Amino acid sequence: MLASATPLTDFESVRELTTALIAPLSAEDCCVQSMPDASPAKWHLAHTTWFFETFVLARFEAEFRAYDASYKRLFNSYYNTVGDKHPRAQRGLLTRPTLAEVIDYRRDVEQRMTRLLQRRGIDAAALSLTRLGIQHEQQHQELLLTDIKHLLSLNPQHPAYRYADAAAQNTPSTLRWHAYKGGVARIGHDGKGYSFDNERPRHKIFLHDYELAFRLVTNGEYLQFIEAGGYAEPTHWLAEGWDWVCAGGRKHPLYWQHGDAGWQEYTLTGLHALDPGLPLVHVCYYEADAYARWAGARLPTEGEWEHAATAYETTQAHADANFVDNKRLHPSPASGNETDLQQLFGDAWQWTQSSYAPYPGFRPAAGAVGEYNGKFMVNQYVLRGGSCATPANHSRASYRNFFPASACWQFSGIRLARDTAL
Image (cartoon, helix red, strand yellow):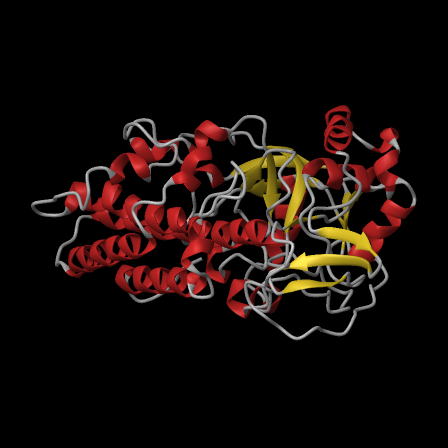
């Protein structure tokens, strides 16, 4: 989580990273929308700016005047209480304003936010909403990378977002298990540092004895599932998942392909030979659940994951994790140190079997920002841990990401769990 001297330095740091993330992109890259679930990079730039203008400046800036009144609708995402919004699936049709005009908009709002944050005696509510805006922009930094990856993957030239030399192939380490004693445990944010409302309140749960795999599932292990006919055997799949496989004629994860060169994987650094020792990414919940069944295991609950991960949050295991800050932009192999859980934070979001639902006593935030999390608590599953596209200071053990079961364009992977005999 962010921890620096002032809200202003946090604000400036986050805005600078967003600017750096679009540096490799052309104006054409920034305007196109590859599918309804993705957004153009230009829209991410504008929407994160809209958030600060709408929720902070409009309320706390002296003599507030909107930069452009039409932006209130164009760059609203899902805040119905704010007003009308441009249809999500049509964001790629917004050739105007231009990228240059959106960048001018960002600069204007940044200057006004800077003046506000430099003001003596700034309202506590303004600081709270600024922190929310900072966390919100960090989420969109990850979305920007995953959305541009999907866009570039559709180009038959297989262009790279950032070029890198091909690395040596990795050998998967033997899968080991860590056992955890059940009983009454507490999960949810402990009140230290920042948290979203869906991470609260902290509460008690009961856990049975369980085990977690010490690392994430690798490409090589998932390839064994494919070669064993995993996508052709309905008994591995949930009924809805099997319908998803059949409807799309799916035979492998997103960004994998097979041809004369063998198995290859598209990454943000281009198309490469599939590395069997790297963590599997870009699988949906259906695929994660089917693989776990085939492997004689299951997905962890979010309570199990947090219970195990909390002990590692403030240790070097978190500090050394593979986040976007490392600029690798792809998962790294496990270190082979089997005495600790590996890859809990960074590398790949980890699907859990837990439906995204409110914690006991949950109350959404007041006002329009109350639409941020609570209204999505239906037909979604929880993911934990962060990914190689997540900013390091945005990750924490209590963080609850969520996506529908069919979502696979995010950096989502698999950690196996299993029950311990009672």
